[in-house]
Image 1 (cartoon, rainbow, N blue to C red):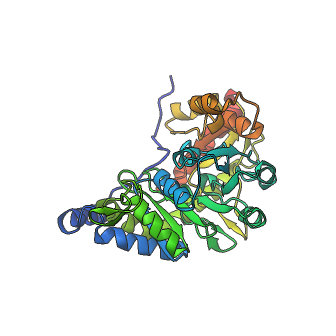
Image 2: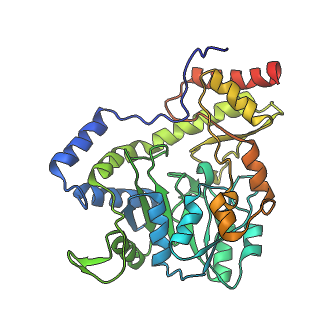
Image 3: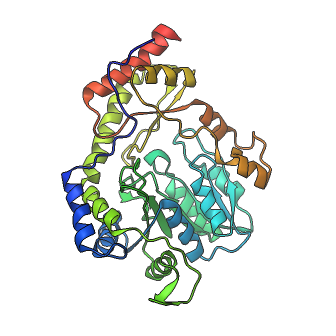
Length: 372
């Protein structure tokens, strides 16, 4: 049995003294809900993304949910999205009364294929829901053109892409609404669950804010069926600290990714994830390989102290509940299904050292050269 010489986690969120003090100050001096920290975070995040408004929520799923309701999604309306994502992406459409309709990915960027999106659009389609998967922006030019020609809404699932840019603009600023998650594994996170929706439409923002706060127009008066989707002031206070560090941490992730590209590019047994260029700047929420003998490689790396992940082992359409609801049997979206059999996430968090990255690469090479 191999004894690991070190331990390298897949994610490593740190709760340091500055964050502790921000949390303590919020507990002692702010309202627990709808406090000053919440409103300041909304202002600061909107400014960061480059939009007029941001509405904080209790999760990324909640942000997606209220976006579709505010946009007027009706029962039976279709939303075209990717089958390769966390299940919450498609669930949000169902929560809002709609029907998720899938279009397969393309291997160039792991994101939804605009050509297949156009084929999937029907007279019942009301919106597109691209996922900027693993922090790599989707082809927003092509998707915006489809929305314009078909008169569709565009909701960006940017839950893994805080700070990623497409043609110099941050994701979350292109669609009618952009939705982000603050789950603890994300590039920008809170100690618990949280999320935020961004938009340039001030009227839409007012509706989403009302939906997230029980549909109220005054303390005890409500004019719509809303939800209890508020972000706590404590989480907002911590998130404000982390937002100031986000660009630095994303730059560190890109630096780590560059090292992986340099050290692993000659290995034929793996495909490296899509890389940025002059127009696309990813933020590497995950660094995902497509690997031959994926499961054996994962076991080898973890035996040597390197935590790995599989994002995602089951495409959404093949989840048991989606098979039951919509009759999927497999084979409908072959690239997503193939991806799920080969994908392996290796550590890319900003606390990795150059020595850690070298060790990860050495162990990947050892597996293919010496073992497999």
